Image 1 (tube, helix red, strand yellow):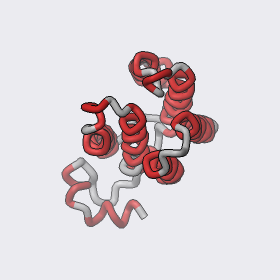
Image 2 (image 1 turned 60 degrees about the horizontal axis):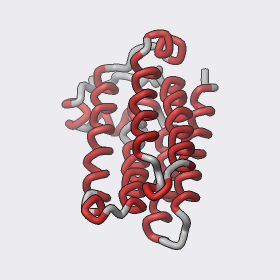
Image 3 (image 1 turned 90 degrees about the horizontal axis):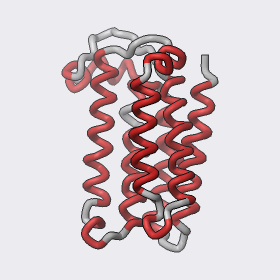
Image 4 (image 1 turned 45 degrees about the vertical axis):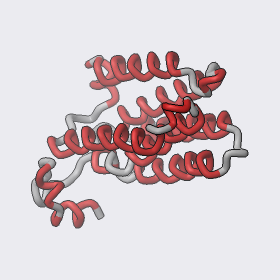
Length: 187
């Protein structure tokens, strides 16, 4: 599937894909470790969220701390990685992260003016869910399968205000934990 799209895509070529280059998903276990970490951070910061729904201080410290430890410590990356990603995959990863922040601004940006924390966090969860789609070029088809339940969960929260936010956030955290455990166990 990927090979057909990549062979004809000018965008893929601009991002560094070389025609016929097989994609290897060498960092699935590292991605899994991140998903376990961020899922746990979401659960803890939701439990302590109070009026913010997800405590932004706990979430922010957990996010930055996890990035520093998981992606910044060679001992961790060597243990959970099977090799470096290609230039194309590195560029796709960057594109996916930029997409996430752009989508966050588009989906929830106006809610910052009114401090509508439910919409802010649900917009962030939806943007995060959607950013897993381009991450499939980096970590493989499991990212598509991860994006589907996360997107549905966030949309339910946005479209059905009667559903408690805590339920949506807990489901999001548990989905990420579950996928993370599955990816870490891959070999």
